[in-house]
Length: 65
Image (cartoon, rainbow, N blue to C red; front, top):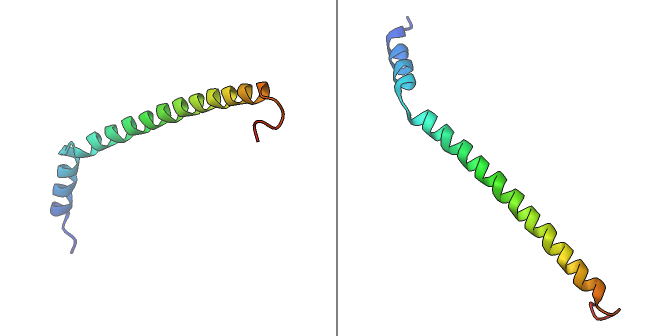
């Protein structure tokens, strides 16, 4: 026969613990930081690409190769 007592105790302990929500909050914070970092790096990369294009267009032919 299956006993409900141990399962109920485990379930109560799982719901009472605060480790799960804390880990979830850290995961969400990490995901937000990654998104900000990727957006920043992409923006900087696009600006640098445009700067190099401007430099390349001002150089005489053959000097950039």
